[in-house]
Amino acid sequence: MDRLQAMEIFVRVVETGSFSAVARERRSTQSAISKQVAGLEKTLGAQLLLRTTRALALTEAGERYFEQARRLVAEVAEAETELRAGDTQLQGWLRVAAPGAFGRLKVLPLVQKFLAAHPGVKVDLRLADGFVDLVEQGIDVAVRIGELTDSSLVARRVGTTRRGLLASRKYLRSLPKTASMPRVPEDLFAHNCIVYSELATRNAWTFTAGPGAGVEPGSSCTVRVGGNLQTNASEVIRAAVLAGQGLGLSPTFLFEEEMARGEVQLLLADWAVQELPLHLVSPLQRRHSAKVRAFGDLVAAAGL
Image 1 (cartoon, rainbow, N blue to C red):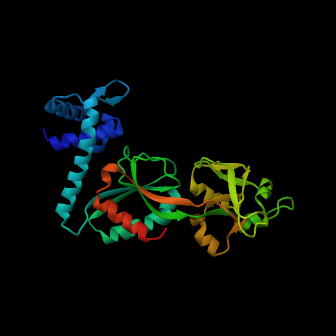
Image 2 (cartoon, rainbow, N blue to C red):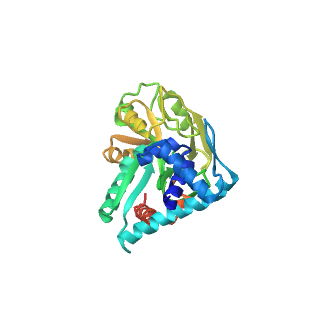
């Protein structure tokens, strides 16, 4: 039995919670994967997994072994990659996850630059709004917008996401007399607002008064807006705003070109919206990865 291969399989079985998922990854059979783990248990003289028809669970011995095995597997893979590539060239796959629109507009150009600089690297770029389980999906590094809640990940602050109340010129030209240009947050009650459902606040939009707001600077105002569209996809927010369907409380990076051309306008300029931190996060076992470090350096230098 190849001990390292068996360890790799055991680690991925635990991470995915499934023999069949690992079999698909390796283009093997569930039976072959199960035999590898059973062989490892026999070699170690300890049961690592409790198998039931519905789920897998680590034994006490399995919990101890898993953390060490996961670390060793990651370090061996990284050492072999760097040895094959020499001291200066990176090699192998880098799996990157990012929110949909941000990934398309901001991360993809950096990935292309990274690939040009490191011809031995291949990138698997996965774009999706919402939560992504890095361990389960085998992600090396992910972009996270907003405050972090998972303390088990290694995080690196790489930027800030500015947000604002945005409307297209098409929408503003179509306003009836009963819904004039918003001057204060309460004016939003008369407008169709497009809600991003991935945020915990959803349709509760909070604004902080600036010097020209006409109220005490620093005071906040939260309005619960209404509208006929909500979505969990930032690309839908972008499309709906551009189509003139309503107002969006959105990251401004979604509309940089349209704002520069005057097609999209920032409203309530005297009222600030909380900026969101931008982090790169990685599973603990990838903290020593040269590819992750190099990609992180590139993203940090981009000044997002």
